[in-house]
Image 1 (cartoon, rainbow, N blue to C red):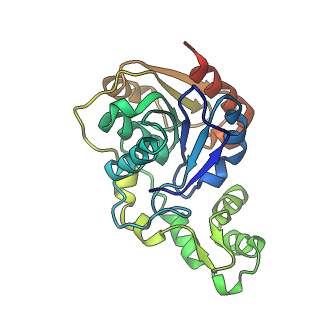
Image 2: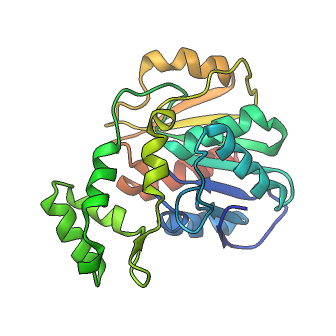
Length: 253
């Protein structure tokens, strides 16, 4: 099963499962998970090929959805799910494959469509880091800076460094091999009629007006909201605003 970090205690409410995006981890969501845990248990997961979770050549969204379903089954059989970017696509696939496992769905700044850009330059940069010269995260950040990676992403990527073992907590080879699948979304005739919030950064172009038809076909009850001033990493750009929007949606009757 996926590695998980638990926040808070079980309550009468379903737990909240948080699925991070590409190159992320459960640890990245610690602050938001802790804040939301005042209303019940929050389960942040390391997605496959990330953090302390399983390494696999299979990084299809169907497999990631089944991973999440297994976590939910181990925590009562039903959960509200928050997914960002890659984790948002996995959460959508979970709803479509395991409809009874989800109560409410929050999809953060992603649509169930194929994207044309690539995340490969970041994998190339991480592969070029000489880990034998890394004693602290700042050493790796300096090398990433020399490779043209912006400051915010330097800090983000190095959260997935195991300094003791001198390795990335990312299966870079599997992620590179599966990049076309990660950037795409499976073809499906399924739909999920439960409550879904598509929460986007107002400064991001990941969820466009032309995507709404596809979203509504797969998720007929979808609602849309934007965080002012936030980009694709909306939970990092405006953590308080993100938390508030998620809380209001989850607590609504």
